[in-house]
Length: 370
Ligand code: 3PG
Ligand code: MG
Image (cartoon, rainbow, N blue to C red; front, side, top):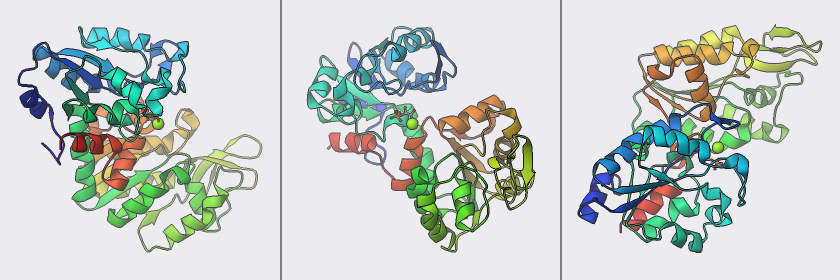
C-alpha cells in the first residue's frame, strides 16, 4: 500500500497468483493522431512497465482506454485500431477493447457499463493517470467490485506530483502557459500557497497584463477574469509576467514590443528579454514544474519563448517535472524530453492533483481496498 492505495504487489498477494487471471488495465491511450498515424506514442510506452509486469506473471491482460471525445457513439475517426497495432508491436499478447467513450455509459459512470467492463475479470489495475481526474465508469467503477490496484505509471505520477505538493526543495518555481486563465485558476491559487515564484506566459499572460492596466492590443484575453488576476497580483506573491512580447502587428508583420503591445497588434509569444529573465529564475530553482507553452510554438516565428523555457528546464540542476500534452510535445520537438526528471502523461490530471492532492481515480482505489 502507498498512501492507502494498493500497488501491483498488493494485487498479486490478494489474488494469490496471477497466472491465468484476467486483469483489466485502464490505460490512457488518448494519443495524438494524424489521420490513422500516431504522432506520439509516449502514452503507450508509458504503460509498458505495468503491462509487462502482469504478462510476465502469466496474467491474461486486457487494456481499455478512451481516445478523443466521441461523445457516447461509435465514431470511425476515434477507432482504437491504430493504437491496437502499435500496442501489438510493443506489448504482444495484450488485448485492447474498443474506445470506452463509444458507450454513453463511460462518461455517465453508468453502473451497467461498469458491470459490462468487469464481466469475467479477476482484477483491475488503473494505470490511466491522464484520465484519473474523470469520474468515469472505467476509472471509478471497477474498484467497487473486484480486487484493484494502481499500476506503475500511476504510482510514479502520484509519487512525483504529491512530492512537489508536499515537500518541494526550494526555491520551487512553477512556469505556466497556455490559453486560458479560467482553466488554471484553481491550480494557480493552490500553487501560490506553496511556490516561491510563479512565471506566467502563453496567452493567459495577457489577462494578467490587462489587469495591470497595460495595453495588450488585440491579444487574446479573458475580460471576466481581470478582477481575479488583479486579486492574485495583489496577493503579495512573486508572480513574474513577460516584460516584452513578440507577435504580429496590425499589418501582419512580426513585431517585438516592450511593456505595451501596439494598437492592432496581437501577442503570440513572450519576448527575448522575458525568456532570458524566466530562464534565470529556472536556473536558480531547486524544483521546477512546467505546464503550458509560452507562445504559439507550432509556428517557428513564435517558438523562441517556449524553446528558451524548455532549454532552461532541461539545463537546470533542479528537479524538473513537465506536465501537459503541449509542453511535453514541445520538449520532444526540441529533443529535450530526456533531459527532464519526469514528463507527466497527464495535463488536466497533473494540475488537478497539484491543486487538490487527490483525484477521483485514486479515491476509488483507496475506497475499494477498505
Ligand atoms: C487527456 O488527454 O487529457 C486525457 O486523456 C483525458 O482526456 P479528456 O480531457 O478528453 O477527458
Ligand atoms: Mg485534456
